[in-house]
Image (cartoon, rainbow, N blue to C red):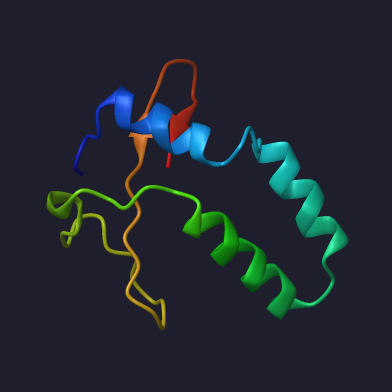
Length: 83
């Protein structure tokens, strides 16, 4: 797994304009249609900075997606983490 520095994670978090995981969960509960949920996730993703080139590797690639998707997870203290 590629470890992204905390500075990059902070930039990514701030790019979501303070959106919390609870905000995302609440929005999902309001969206009944899977296409609306899909569009919402795409919208959130577009607000994030692009991953560094070295993060596009086999270890970070999400298997089973129709699209090419990479996810970088960075474990933090107390069973929390950044994605």
